[in-house]
Length: 277
Image 1: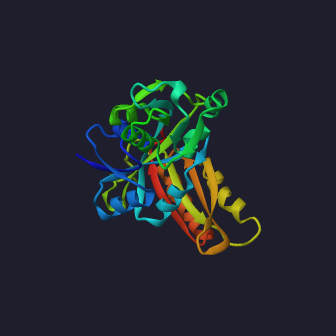
Image 2: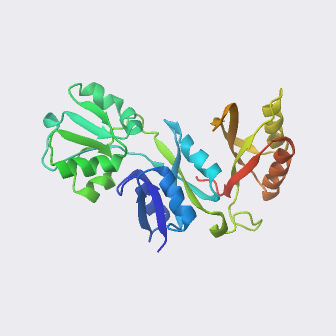
Image 3: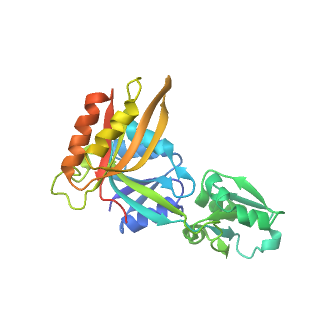
């Protein structure tokens, strides 16, 4: 059975994504994302399943930075529909609740619930499933949590309300990440379904540098699906750009790397993989 590292507790959305990707996985929960990468690189985990982008909240930029810093590669992506539930200690009622725990992003995605219930206060916690674990252990009917349904069954909580999310078009994109030497031949021209790549690059400090880099992709017919910049640690006002793009032929990705390497101080491909549907 593969050992899969995630950030967060059992019962989290990362746990749910892992069960859909790996039917026989052994979960390795990690308190912070860096520990999940450490487990992967050290060999304690065979792969990691990590959220990279939410359709409402945007990108998990820390994970892109960690992908850049470690000898790992993206092997697969998938979309998970995010459904938030109000979970309580068994027997608790809505009138008893005074505080709701959850990850800040989950709380922000359920604003309507808090507007409709002004006597209930949101309270930020490090993890959605961890919030359920806490309220069940405290046996406190005045505390609830917003978390996946899996967290209720994992810790013995009770789902009081379902689908608290303000917008039903709420999806999170997850990456399956492996050590570079253990990836399943992601760059083979014969690899089935490989039609998307993710890369990171820096630019020379000169006018039109970003336009020149993007023009390389455009000239190759690559379909740019995401572009974002992040500060370079220790180098104020210098930035690394993260880009995802689709392609129809593996040779396009090879040419894109060669073209960017010719004009960029640094470029690293983070992975090639089948685009999620």
